[in-house]
Image 1 (tube, rainbow, N blue to C red):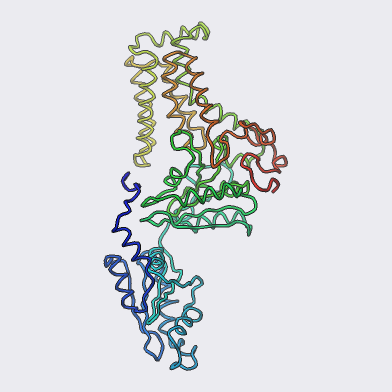
Image 2 (cartoon, rainbow, N blue to C red; image 1 turned 90 degrees about the horizontal axis):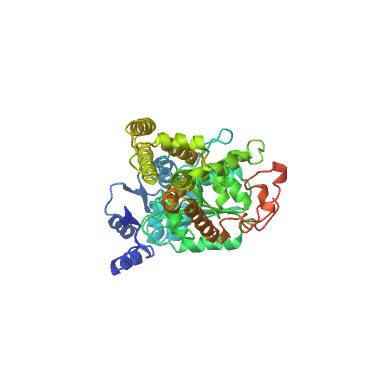
Length: 513
């Protein structure tokens, strides 16, 4: 599907089609209906209902909607029944003196009893309304139309989060419906300053993308930058928030994510109150949050729902990060170049386990890590009912068989298993991907020059991290640049009474809540 996200060729055909869609509606109702029917290729899911209105003048109307995207009960009860009712006559004093504009006004203000109703004047607005689930009403001898909010497609209900679970905390997660997601956030932040701006993105898909922030708290420069980058997107389609993330992130060629994504409304609500900006994409349950900091990927929502542990669990997650990143590299470096660093009994035990192994430590670690990555990917792609069983059983069987066959040492199996378990401790899945990508170059450096290679790799990684920015905010804040006040909620978390001020790292407009 890579071809789907290429920038389209702006040829004469596309320009002519765009000009036709931007044409204003004609006063000839039948011409408008025929143009819509031809533009949609006589699609069978397009419903066009022509009715005679309940007027003595013989006025007719056309009702257009897409089957499956529209609540047909609302169309029947509040549109068709209203337009065909005799009550429409009673709203006019003298039918003979009524103009087409009067009929349009009466239908808009009195007849159709739907809360969301608005005027449309071009085919572009008509297509956007119909394909979004709204119902369009076209009247005779009128160059304007009415769109009624009747969207009512089937969607997945609010369910517990699957990827970011907690022991204590809310159990609701985002869905694929944009309005459901914005409502979940508004339930937690009942503030009139919580503003939402929605615009379609994608020249073909016209996917609704919403920007959500708290006016007066969010930094205006960051907000303007978000709008600027979203306005610069020119791709045929947006099917998931990951596409938006890749198109507007600060730097593409980096293994570290610079935009935070989550399926938890409470995390987004907390981020908004800190001064961050949320980007919601219709059709995906994952919401983006900017700006993002490196330490943010080691924090979980449950950190703020349990009593303060002064950051012991966060320190444990950081330790797991370094174990997952450096575990095989340290084993290779110590067993190959720096055996004197190990106690003699331990070194003898490792050497005895490696006796008869035909591969050096680097090839041994590379083989086991590759096998485990294959098993992990197989467990994800296989059906859920058997995926976990296959990955667990496969790891046990292959590990045991490799040791008995003399291909790998028992100590290497332990190191790889500890590395894998440590990578699962990380709360954010995308930071785990970065660890998996960087692990192999560090193994190569360790095999080449030992611990010196590992130190060089870590130094290069730190320089790269310090050069990253997320919408103008330093990625390694509050460590680089160092901010003493923000240390209260970085590696440690002070009790709630000590978190009265907002973080200075993301430069919110208001420091106090």
